[in-house]
Length: 85
Image (cartoon, one colour):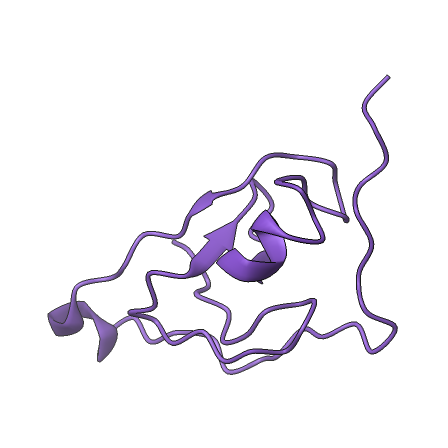
């Protein structure tokens, strides 16, 4: 089950569980669409993987399966992933 992290790891923007702007990689690193399209150029700075839009959990399921409250933020900001070899 997805963690539904509450923020962008790059700019710390809030990303609620129903946010259409939340993007994740296969390791569930979470970023906002603005950072993904801009500074990150579509690649995760942590693993180099691609991003997809994070699915929105149905509201009826959020009570039983709540989103994470643990924020992941890198105060030094984020940099584009290194080019793949």
